[in-house]
Length: 589
DNA sequence: TTAGGGTTAG
Figure 1 (cartoon, rainbow, N blue to C red):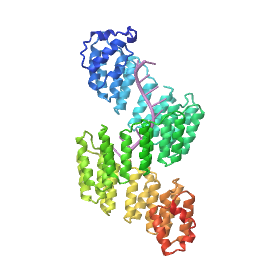
Figure 2 (tube, rainbow, N blue to C red; figure 1 turned 30 degrees about the vertical axis):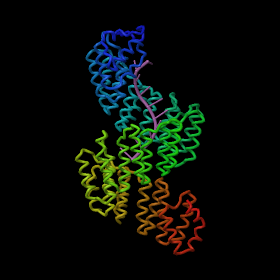
Figure 3 (cartoon, helix red, strand yellow; figure 1 turned 180 degrees about the vertical axis):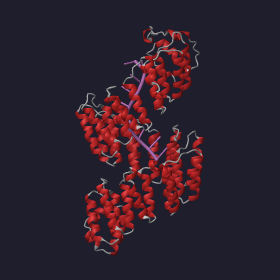
Figure 4 (cartoon, rainbow, N blue to C red; figure 1 turned 120 degrees about the vertical axis):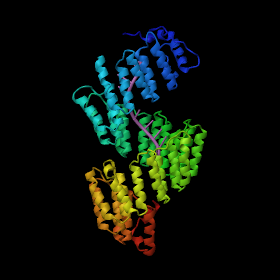
């Protein structure tokens, strides 16, 4: 059945003339607008809520002749943007029952709808409808499915589908499909694979565009490879693809996270020189970066600057600054910000609450944190696992071990599924208070779930064992990591090196350092500090000074604990100072 | 021309 395109109806829409239009409903206002202006008018803007959308749908299906599939597609898109996925499904079924013709667009919308519901398996069940209706799949169909796989963490399936499409020449990927695959890969931590795909793409007919470059630049920045990101950034410019606000924002975020403030300034100026002005997200990235480095006063200045430029802070900006105050122990200031936000009619979400709760816990005000936890549901928000983990940690911090255990039981009874962080917090708490047997018994109980464990979880266990003098056991767990497919990180090595150093086992520490370097994990500031302290404690001054020089040469510096220990040694034996010619510069750093 | 792609907070 062929439908007359609505745009050819001389400004009137036949199917709408049968509908009685009461004045009150916004949908009806929209229909009225459509009648007046034809299909080009935006009824999308008039549909404000689910009721509007549903009412419009029911009116549409009663019309004679029926509206075209284009109008149904538009309406479904609105419902999807409102996240009313199941309503889209039921309405699509109704459409099918009524025999309203379908096309590739609306079927692709249905596939995407299932993928957004995290039901990629159901999305595949739409494919037979294409076949039955003689409609061909296209690149959009497959792109949506690939995205669906990634959304459900099915990276292997996503990549296999993509490879199959290319290998069997089922569908030639376009820029969007490449971007979808690369974004999926990068968000799951496969930065190198993302970069390889970019290089592969350069050799094929579909060339990387702004989106593709921005995805890879963002991935490199998130992994801390800011130099590689800059190289790629320059490469895209040389190829005549100008970066936009998102590319700059990703790059600036990378520099913020590395504390490279000069580069932040350089690229902020560069973007403005190119008439690309920072928006609320760009400013929030800078504010968050400053806050995380403890530079809250600078963050406040940036906030004033953005307001001066007419850019209003949003909930994320306020949350970042609240977290900045909390990290410095200024939970009361964070509470001002929090109340100010409410005054500005910005309703706090669970992340805001969790930040504030963490702030109270950090100040050991667990009662305040608990009080706030109770208020969350009253204000229409819902605590999540992170909120509960924060309180659990807070209870351990103040030594309320019994309450922490009860709280853990309570959170499970409330239906929360403990995550790795929950288990890590419990184990860390047990180890902190010397409850090694309890910790290890719990650790053994978790054995079945260990396949999901990450390196940070094992770092907690290794650290706990080291701190409790169980170095052999810690070392044994370390040795098992590779068989579990886990790669030790700098924290793992530093924890074990600290453990050995504290026991005066400097040879074992050095062995561990060698392993660290052999495995491509570079020693960091913590590693050097731990070694300097180890040598100082064992009174190995000459070895300590050699290391100290190397440390300074590599751009690292003594932290507060090391400096204090070094000063104590110098007080007892002033001649040590002569062996450390650059001590003053070290202290200054 | 109704479908699919990139940035910020616990």
